[in-house]
Length: 277
Length: 313
Image (cartoon, rainbow over all chains, first blue to last red; front, side, top):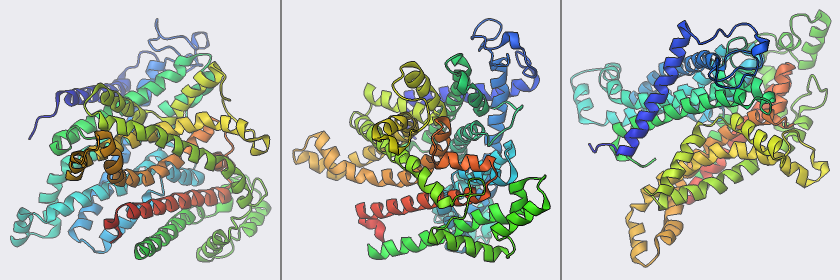
């Protein structure tokens, strides 16, 4: 296995660092934030960054750094649960489709896969919200449903190529059933691939959550979320640019971090792809 | 080729059918009583009964689905509850904003992404390649609505070159409308261009190692000529596939971007319909958006098969 080129492993390190920073900020916000974010402090409104408020304050005098830390919690939780939904439903579907190639489930998975491209998570969210009203749960559901066929497809593709290998044939000769082979031999072998796909869907989920809460289909006030912070800041951008800059930077850095991490992980798992994409 | 097209067409019809059943079920069957959802809890029994009659809620779900789907096929999308005009008219009017926006964004994405990917692949490993790949990483991570806000603050509020939002309407002439669409289109196009550039670079690097490129070089073509004449066509296959998928993200992006710029397109229509609980509009416009995506994917599939005969089997 060729070692990854130095530049790329550096990029992966930056990715891991950015991701860790975001996760740490979210976790720390559970027990501590620099300032409280409940309540309104009008004299302290729209303070520029620096001084008592590291990243400044918003139009209600709330500390932007504290809001970002709590917002990280919303973003990470929504994206993480959505990846969980996608994996929990998609991976078994994909395994089943590969084990019974050409069967009913296989056909269903492939059709579902074609269909989901017509339903971006935003359209799913529009449908759900039109009927149930907006909430963070809807955002999770919408992104999670979108993730299911993605994981089903990746699992099916990887599992299909494994089923032709000799050690799987040996396991069949030894009398193991399809379910046992899938669980004991196929799943552990495709797990790294699923982790890489998980990282990609995680970063897409964070972007999707930001978009949904920006248009009001995601987390509702008073729960801070990066998308909502941007929606609130839109009219203030000329007056106090930092209010609109900080949440956007938080999204970019988090998504960038996850993408670099995912690229790096993929290169390590599949050296053939090194330096290609 | 004809057999392939017919085969794809049948799966296209099946896909549209499945999508329409899902949309219908979510909007009209799962909530129980759509009239109640639309009017809220304080509606009087008389208004509820009137709306139920108007929506034809008397019949069973199957009869209502056939009625709705039949209407869709005939181009009858029902009457908007809030606007009191046929939804088809609303859609036609709003599409006059959304369709030019999507075309402009797609054109821009190709105009930026294609040369960027070509240059990065041709100059692989150089500072230029590194700079382009770095820029695409940022482009992919950028939420397009935030990028749109930044564009507005720099080029509309700051420089005053473009309007910060709104749409004058096509009866005001072409120039002011195009000006209103420039910033939204750039905001939509940039992330798409970044993805296009990355996929194209990867695909080109794959083809450049092939024997036929070496043969073309041995024949006396320059590197650039070999890439443009032989590499690009083969690299287009992996490029086209994601572009069909990307179109559905473009539609989703357009819905959000229209809200940033207060553009009276289909996206804003859907959001206004959600806040006004006008389910008739939501149902039909969502279905039309899905139709557009499925139709584009179909066209991409055909283009795919035209470029690579091996895929027709």
